[in-house]
Length: 186
Image (cartoon, rainbow, N blue to C red; front, side):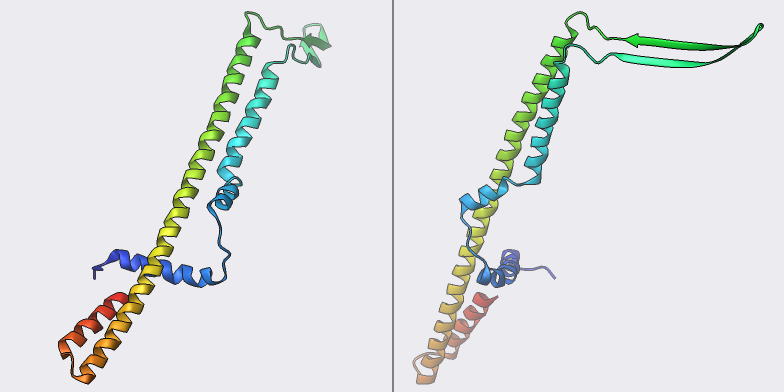
């Protein structure tokens, strides 16, 4: 069975869910909602990416890497018998061709891109909070209007019933008022 007024059904669901909660909820301002949005996990994740990029920049800007020391050994089997080999090596990486400065520029660009991503994420979250806040205000106003319509329809139906009782109106007018009351409460 299809609903003739899906908007009314959705409004009924919103009212059923939010009205009991609104009775005990403290009103929140848009500024408070936007301030609370700063703790959004998406913003935190984007900020962590900036921290990671700053670490990569610091690493890329290192002039010399730590030297490496390798010690190894083992038996060597040959025609003269078994001999033991011992190897010791020390290594140091020296970058040529401005590799370090190029790597540092790439890391700085990645950090700047991550910072822009934080700004973009923050703006997207704020826009979504702003949208949701205003949709909630619209829903709240719709509830108030629906409640007022129901009250007025009930008053008109009662007035029509009284007019029928006094003989000043027909049963048709009462039926129309009752139908309007039913539509207002649906």
